[in-house]
Length: 146
Image (cartoon, rainbow, N blue to C red; front, side, top):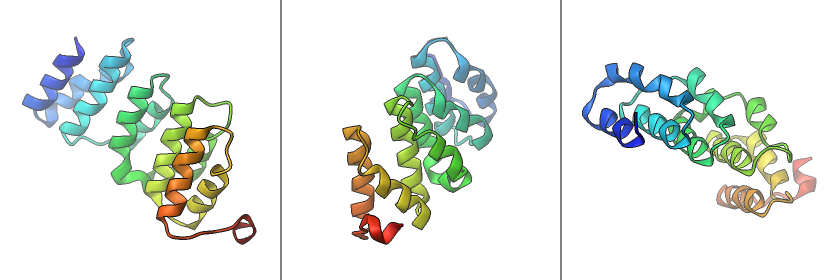
């Protein structure tokens, strides 16, 4: 199956077609995996238990599609699961995915975690976290968050 046929299946299909797309989230091709995730979202099929592991996908495209699918239900993801994906040895795209989902969750604990990331060595992670903290309208200092 090609990535365009994944999109076509989602655009022309119905929720029953999701069972054809789920196996494609493990396809060797990153393009097909990402289109399968996007297709599931198009079909309005959501299964957090099956989507959350895709945050660890080696492809940035798959991680982005997964974040987009999970964002409306970000509160279903355990905070500690996301914090584990923020470790400096994780790939940047996984760290950014966790940052986006923490921001979507909201809450003081998440804001504290993001504030700590605003000092991260990775410029993209630092920028994303800093934007979220600034957008929250809470100019916390490290002393306030301790």
